[in-house]
Figure 1: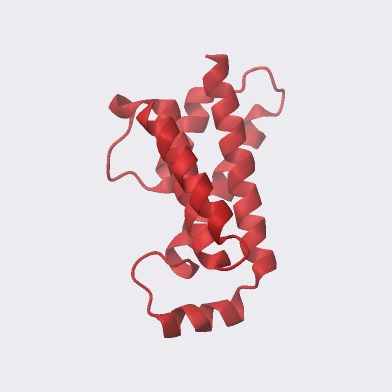
Figure 2: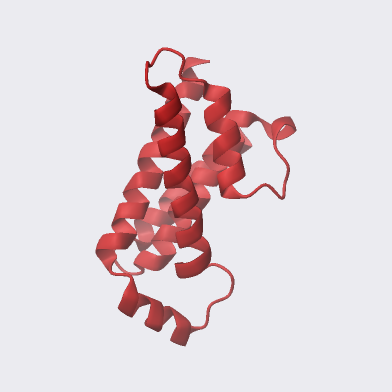
Length: 136
């Protein structure tokens, strides 16, 4: 249940930040995706140092969308999206102690539209993972 609470906590932060600090909201979305993967996998099936990309690949592999003819392409596509979300989080979000000057410079490059794309993509993947967890 701890994993589920972590997901809810990040979603609440995301909702609070989405209109005032979209770079922080993007960070919250990526953290929510990470928490969803950890929740799906269970604490004995990932390493604390796993990257978001590694976590999502393990999760998508564990989900194993056998019923879809194009499941291999779907998993590859979702893995690529998750890798892009991780790069966004590490490079552009408020993660990793960015100064306010760095954040302002980033805000001049990354608009709210790009941040919303990452946030919505993260949210959709989280919903998919959580739906599959409930199906187990």
